[in-house]
Length: 342
Image (cartoon, rainbow, N blue to C red; front, side):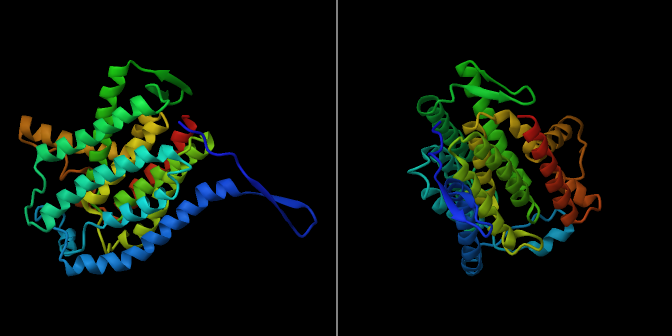
């Protein structure tokens, strides 16, 4: 991976006659992408949301879900377009100086496109299932395959992964590395997709994960800090309109894109195993669905009142805002654990 460019320091006089070193490079790669992405996201929301309403791109709500969700029917979805636009525009400013952001941008947009097609078919074409399962999986495998090819041939990662708590990097057998890459990327993307079920849940959880990766990217001078900061800014702006009660939902367009961002960023930092720690909420959401399906098929009984697991807590009497807050707090704590595990 490319290292960040040499830092350029400028001295500014202060009142006591001494000078203050101001790091222009850090300002350029950290503060600016957050502010740019946040600004674009906040500006786009009041423009795009009414547009989605006029086009009647409203959310479909399951009748068998929590009763409190019925009032959300018709809330504009496909708001993930706002996240993708602000993220992409901001990242493009940095592609020339930080080429390692390109694979992350590609994977984020690739999975975002799959989510967009799924949303479009469900919302616009009124086909409730969206893309067929094989179509969605084929698209996800294709995007992951291109990313894997790039990792193998155009980076200096060398099939290496950092082991949590040991502080050591190990080089895996090429084929084992590739098998794990497909498993982890696809699992992370679908985990993010399952997490998107409550107002602000996927946005807040992923914002904290993006912050974790931004801290690591800055501390290791990995050359991808602008893209992690762009994700932070995009999500902060989107959350203004996505917190309870949400004025817009991200849809699969946003959730699949965010999963792609998390997985590709982790791999560019050689930290795919850390996903299990910092994105534990993704993991437990997927696991709850698997447990529910397997249990019902084998025994005819359900383990949870409803899966994914955030709905189980809702049906157990937790307010939606409490579920989101607890899941976000868990993620924040686990991100701290992740930093300690490096």
